[in-house]
Length: 113
Length: 112
Image (cartoon, rainbow over all chains, first blue to last red; front, side, top):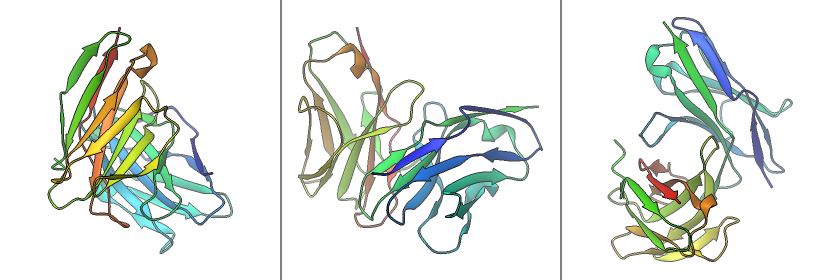
C-alpha cells in the first residue's frame, strides 16, 4: 500500500521569501506523485505532477517539485511567496493510472505581508 | 472553475438520517470519484464510478453507496448517519485512464 507524509502541518513565510513544503512517500511501486492546492471554499486544484519523466517538475504559479527516489521525497518549492499562495497544500500519491489518489494530511501555508 | 459542480453546498442532518449528495461532472468526463475530507485532514477515497459501474472502493462501510447516471453525473448516498460522517465531501471527474482529475468545490455535511 502507498502512503504520504507531509512533514509540516503549518508553514509561515513572509511575502517575497521562498516556500518549502516537505513530502515523503511510501510505495512499493514506481508511483505517480502530485501536489494539489485547496483555497477556502474552492475545489482542489492540481499544481503539478510527476509520472516517471523528468525528476524536476514545474507547475503552475511558479511552483516546482523534485522527485528524489533515494530519499522517497517530493518536496514542493517556490522562490518567492505571494499573498495569494496562502492556502492548504496536499501531496498525493497514486499507484497506477486510473487508481485512487492517496492524500497526505496537508500543509497550511500562511503568508505574512 | 473546473466545470464540476456539487449540490448542495451545505447540509445539516441528525444522527440516523440518510443523505444524498450530487455531482455534475465536467463535460466529456466518464469517471467520477468521491472523497471524504474530515476537518484538518486530507481527503480520503470513498469510491469511483466508470460508465455507471463502481470500479474501486476505499475503506468505507456499505452504508456509503453511489450511483452514476448515463450523463455521467453522480450521487453519493449515506445511510444511518453518524457524527463522524461530518466532513467535506468532494467529487472529482476525469476522462478516464491517466487523465487529470478535476475537483468540485464540495458539500459540507454536518451531522448533529
